[in-house]
Image (cartoon, rainbow, N blue to C red; front, side, top):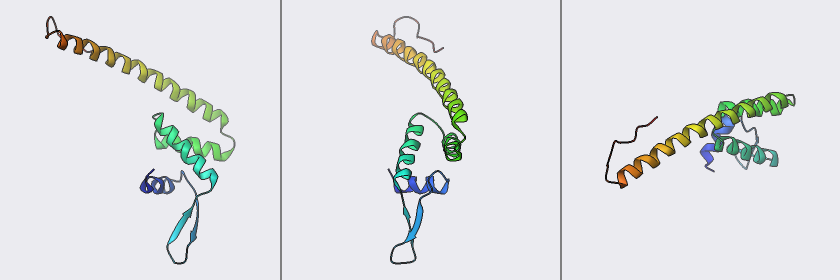
Length: 115
């Protein structure tokens, strides 16, 4: 993971490491094990297609200790969003398969239509 990405997460308030001074006036970030677990959770959320706004909301709910119901609702909503996206992707794949087959057959017959 890039340092700039981690710094962005800190600026956005997703990660809240301690800061210290190492032999000078330039602060450094001191990440605890909990910060590293949270970083992995942020990465997992992004891999699932969640925005940083959605992830920030889930992190805030987790930190508040009262957000399990809201977290569950957000996860269920995101799952439904991914299911709809999967259906759309499947339609696109079907179109591509038809178009490839049409091209491989020398463009004989009407071109497959998208939709």
